[in-house]
Image 1 (cartoon, rainbow, N blue to C red):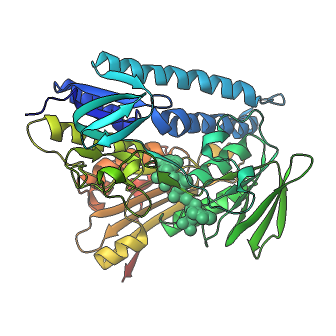
Image 2 (cartoon, protein in one colour; image 1 turned 180 degrees about the vertical axis):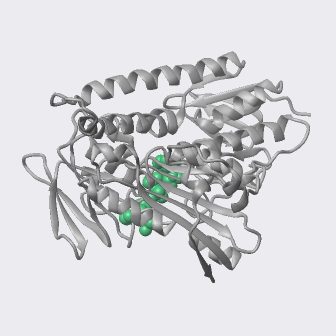
Image 3 (cartoon, protein in one colour; image 1 turned 60 degrees about the horizontal axis):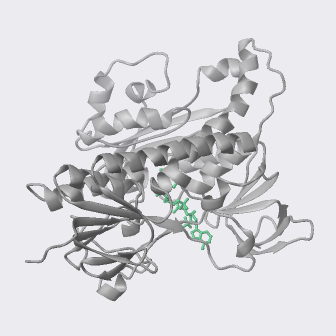
Length: 456
Ligand code: NDP
């Protein structure tokens, strides 16, 4: 029998890798982990956490304005981008340090450096060969940018968190999570924002009413949204500004101070040596794994964004935990990813769980749709013209709730609770039987009465 330096070697110290390492160590395994940037990964360092901090920062602009409707006299507010970034950096460093400390506290051998596969049981880190019975690839993803002329002048979500100044005029390219979230952030902080998306409506894959509603609210907040339009090329002018030429009908060109590309992310597998040791990759470079996170090479596993499936932090965490239990626990565990809720921290934010109307119609054949649009109580005094949307999709035949969607303040907080009910198989009657919590926006979900029935 072989003896290895470790029972598990984890490549990548992000959400999935760290969770797998700590649980495996807790189950008694000898574990080492290597990270070549900062412990915490995309979510902690340049994703979910700093993004949400920036969302809070941006929202103050509306809070100051709304306060006047409640009797406050607010002096003109001033915003300092460097001060925000410095505060954000302090918190990110604290969190990253916690990740590392927790790993050490779990008796994981923590390494700093780039790991590469040498063979199915060996990795090279900082010129040293380390062997392991199992190797977990948890290297996440990185921004993808299309190779258009002048793309070198654009930034991505990797750079936007550390810009020295807030750009005055920004073009955001893409219509997904990152694009609409940063449109809200940069607009709230005072930049003139234009979002340009190649498709017919932002947030492809979300419920159509949600997409339309968010679009309307973004426009009301002063964001210019260009649809069916893409960038042809970007040129840098002598004064440092950027001139963007478009393909598409609405605008020919635009002058901005920054172009932020948010055109998706690709799995981080280049240079890892995966193909060389025979690991199957998909067309985007993602590691192909079975339901237990195992690749076609039995000792090599992968979790999280590098597998190019559901690229959400809580999913990577689930997959990492499941893998550790599979390898070192009594029975194999597969992450249960039914009814994964998700949020888009746009302004206003989106919370969603379950099927969209189109998906539900295709799956159930006949559905009941309940929806409501209203102005939050807060805005009766603030005077702000912001509408909240709530929508429920119910299977006509068995009355089970198939999807719940909301666009409006606090919707991610509200949808988390509904996700539990939907996962447990709640019916419309269960929601109706639940006493409302008044006055709240959430109570709409238990008071919806008017339905539209649709058949496929
Ligand atoms: P998304 O996949 O969400 O969106 C990518 C966008 O870029 C789409 O609108 C897509 O258009 C467009 N696009 C893709 N390729 C091109 C191209 N060549 N030219 C022009 N446009 C293009 O990716 P993001 O980068 O926004 O985010 C990556 C992932 O990270 C998300 O999918 C999500 O899983 C995760 N994430 C989650 C967050 C959250 O939970 N709140 C926040 C941020 C990220 P089309 O629709 O036509 O394909």
